[in-house]
Length: 104
Picture 1 (cartoon, rainbow, N blue to C red):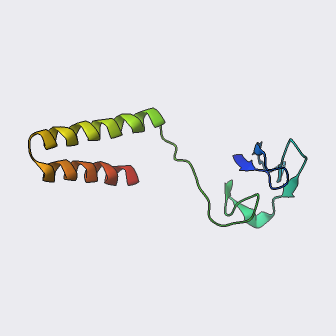
Picture 2: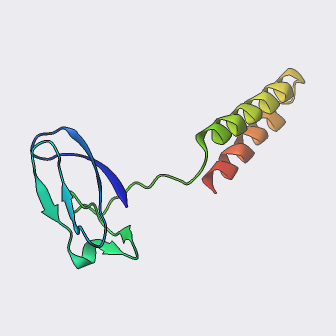
Picture 3: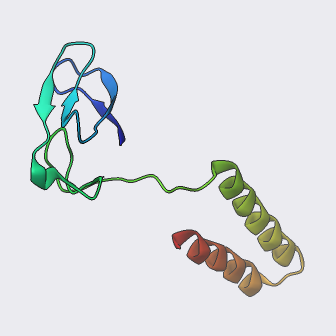
């Protein structure tokens, strides 16, 4: 798996790949390393931060950013059209529907 992190030693941004063979995180600039123990990764997915050990993780969705921006633009256009028709309830409802769809 590919990870991006700020090195705790030199504070520079770093990227690395953690595999079952490497079993560790390393900064290529200063050489800082941290081994990955068995409880840190389950089914090739981290259970906690591999750099600091915190359990609060962020995972990027596997979704095209261009498609996401296009969907948001369509929602704004439809909502604006309803507002021009003097139907604010439908305008707000459209924005809410697109926001709910984004949560999925």
